Image 1: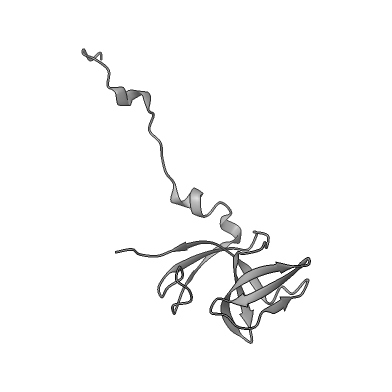
Image 2: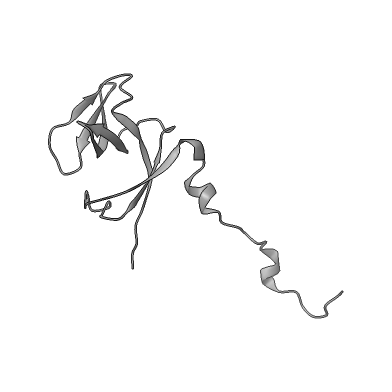
Length: 117
């Protein structure tokens, strides 16, 4: 079937699909979600959802989910002289992350999702 008339300028632009799954969870087997129970920082608030990826490498400045004394905690990673330190978000003493200390490190926070309305 043919349609007469001028083509729409929008026809040049193909349909672009957006998949939040592909965007936020590129490695599903190593990704999990954690809901935040209390305000932790200006950009991490109560009821936010952390998307944590266990396959991501540590680097300076990232947020990491760790287990300390049986508690799940969110810490900022700091790199100093080839070693990684875990600092509380509200200040306090940083803890050295020892090599092969997998029971402490759960993964790196890849995304923080929170409501704005």
